[in-house]
Every structure is written in structure tokens, then in C-alpha cells.
Image (cartoon, rainbow, N blue to C red; front, side, top):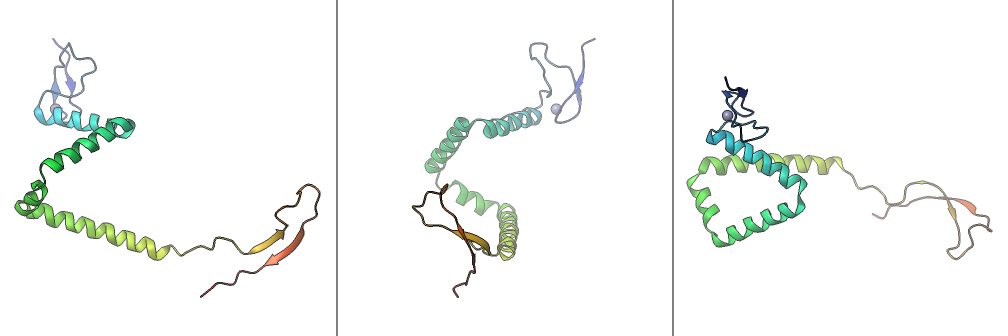
Length: 137
Ligand SMILES: [Zn+2]
């Protein structure tokens, strides 16, 4: 009896093709699509040349089909409203982060040594001064 293994996508048992080493997905179309999606996601993450080609290819396709997304949005109102809601959520998170982050001064309050710019650092004594930052309003 041939060995049967569990598909990594649909979890059904299947007999792997003996010509395919380390087969983890069954031959169903949806499982093969899932396998390819995962492969492409990993390839995009680790191969910058592939990512650039992928981006260029998509840009070229969009320039050849300029009306595609406009028509898609018109014929798929659920997609459009879901996308709008997701974007509102991302905008809310971004605005919340902007409220939390206050501008930080470039020079922090504290004690500093003031030295002439052209001085030989090894031979000179630095004079300690306290610097107070006065914000410009
Ligand atoms: Zn499967």
C-alpha cells in the first residue's frame, strides 16, 4: 500500500506522487494555489530582484489595463466598503500615534563642555558650563 500523508492546506489524506520529492500539498486546485501563494510570498520576502520584477510586471499590467480597478470597484461594492473601513482604521491608528509622539529637542538638557572647534583635544582643558535650552515659541 502506498504511503498517505496529510495535505498542508486542506488536511485531507492523499498519496503523494513518487516523482515529487517532499510533496506536502494534494493536487486539488485550491491547495496548489495555496502552495504557490506561500512560495511567492516567501520569494518576495527574500529575493529583492524577484520583488522588483514582480512590481514592474504589475505596473506594466496596470498601465495596459487602466480601467480594471475602476470597473472592479464599481462592480464590487462590498470590496469597496470593506476597503474603506480598513483604511479608516489604519488612519485612526496613525492619528493616535501622532498624538502620542511629541517632538523631542535635538539637544537635551544637561551639563556640557564647551571647547573651541580648532583646539587640540588632548592638550586642552575643557571648561564645564551648564546650558539651558530656551524654547522658541
Ligand atoms: Zn489539499
